Amino acid sequence: LKDSGMKDKMAIAEQWVNSFQSDDTKFAEMGQFRANLANGVALMHVALAVDAQIATKLFKPKEIKKPSTIKWNVIARLGKFNDFCREYNANIHLFDAKYLELDDDGAPHPDLKSVMVTLENLSAAIDKKGGKQWKLIGQKGSV
Image (cartoon, rainbow, N blue to C red; front, side, top):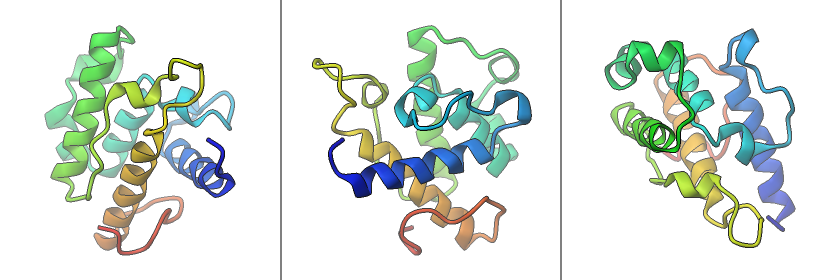
């Protein structure tokens, strides 16, 4: 992504997602927004940390304990994260698993910003509900 403002927002969103991870699931390397979110496991952990009651209705115990990285399971997990955001009343920009893949030229998918906007809107919903988070990301009141 060429827009440096967008890269900065993605770096903050990546730190925000990482702040919800347990010590044993923190990202090994930062600065890899797409790669760190690609299998949906980190997003599942965000959902569980934000509202375990909603998240455990969507994510099965087996998936939470030992998440599979088979493509079909990844696609389903990302869909469940979208469902979580919807149930949490965050204004989501529905995103497809392909947004977290590289495009045909090996560059980040141009629609990757939909993932980031969804995270920003989830952050705003957490803020609106008085929930705990590392910091509010994105535009306040975007819910």
